[in-house]
Image 1 (cartoon, rainbow, N blue to C red):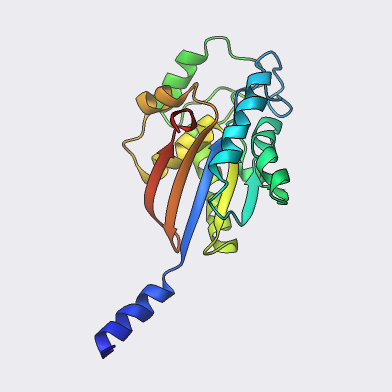
Image 2: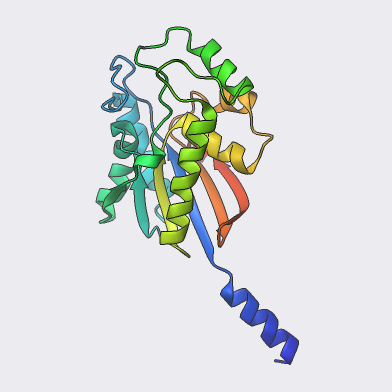
Length: 205
């Protein structure tokens, strides 16, 4: 090995690669309007096995989750079967819409994607959701370098993370995955630089 080869090899060795799999939760019980305690439906409990199967060969080191029950329960089957604890990260929780249940959710979503500062009186705008989730992600990247990490997440929160790294991801893309549950998005990082995003539709595997 000559000097340049040695230098390139050393450079490659110093690059820290971290892989993060965000798992959008399985189908919840929409009759439960408590955003924190909303559980998975019977279909959701069955479909979370798709998540477990997906991670069989991924050599996962850490399992994290939003504090919301539907997110925790979606990764719980995998965690229990593989002897992993689930660490709760408050910053990964879903967007707060308002104190009351929103009937015309379609119009509300579209307004928020058209204006990242738009929010209801007791809710969060997408800019706030994105900032909170990115701060949490940055802390994870600092704490778990060079690891394979699973994070239980939510449709809107996860979509704002994608948008942070890829501004072309907008309302139309969100609509395409709105009812896709569970759903996995794989992020590849060199140190803290995102170098790849790959989306996995578990129902096509």
